Image (cartoon, rainbow, N blue to C red; front, side, top):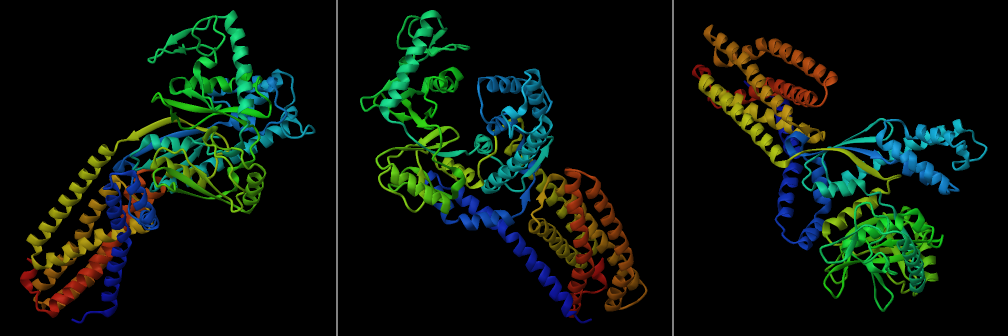
Length: 613
């Protein structure tokens, strides 16, 4: 019996393609192990930068594990539509903010649409929506329709930005869907740093470049705030509680800043530290309170309309060894926004010790940045991200190339996350996590271990049975079984499908089906040998007569698996996918691979009647 060149070529091709498809999985595993072996953040960043393209490419093409195997997070996030509509409004006044405040309270405890709540509140106040939204010629119905379109666009944009952030973070096979008009469902497999992912997803990434006001203007504003708060404290006695450092801090529900006594004339300055150079700081213990104070409407009314008070994102350590956050007075209108950023890259400062993010701008941003820096030499420009000042460098000279830097970053991971959010773009409105479920890595590892054990025991049991029962012929069946599993895994990797626990069950079932086809063939060969035919004739007749039965059983199994995939969800689909791939691979290995192995054995006189038990 002669070997057929086409069959041999097909077997070699399938084997090579399978190994090639699984090669990225091996590279991903080996590079990840090398990355995890670095103890220092600097070495880790240098390694990831030097192997970034290779690692990202390998992860995109590697075999993915499902949430049940790798562990991960299930999140329900909600787009803050109240904030979105506040941004869209114009001519905002105290009455508008009062209405939106009531809408926010009701939206937090109701499933009603935010647009319906806004419309109801405006009707209650007998105010037309056109007073604050769009054109005054628009009717309330037209405006609600436009707001609905804004809401849908914001949800779709938020979903895509979150997807971009997750893709750049490197999560394999994220599942991201929308629910209703303001919620996004996210499933992330293989997450180990949950807090980092939360911050990555929640940050709006609103980047702004704002000019700082002069130090003397900041001090005048603080004097005005202190005087106003002092006059209020003289007529009211706010609750005060000492902190661990001995300073007074506000008790829960206090509306005024911490004071040392009810008659103090320095209620604000008691929590601020002012240096001789004019820099103002707030202690780490009082930061949250001062931040909330600066956001209060009555306090903002005391600040010049073109200015706002912001705190630094990161603290400085002063001479007493404690952490203090700088206080900045910046112009409210941004000179430039993050929309002009085309590229962001995590790196280290020139000294090589401090992480930073390098940014490049488009042509429009480059021209504006050159004009801004050229007109403000000697002044400070604050780089503000999500309402916090990351750095406020002094403009030394005109910057014509559109480059800028965000420093004041504590860790390599934070630099990488900033790079991701800047690349992905800013969210149209803040998002918050409404629900969270986590599958721990240890539980996922237990599932992987259990799945691998079931695979190994299944393979061992089937292999040993075939060897003991069919002897030499069992070797061909076992070789075909190995190729079958290889094909299943390579197809999953090649199509970026995820391997889940039900998928492993599908592979185990496929192994039984694969040898079942071989059993049909071998029993046919035994019957032919029993009728006195030669080994060559028996093998040929056995394959010919068993083919129809094998084809029928595989087609019906494929049909059943297809129906499971079409009408099933989640785990059922994972089982159906591997079953379909395994069934198709089983048909190929049983009919083509084992036959060519027999042809080779016959050419070497390795088969006889005793080879089939």
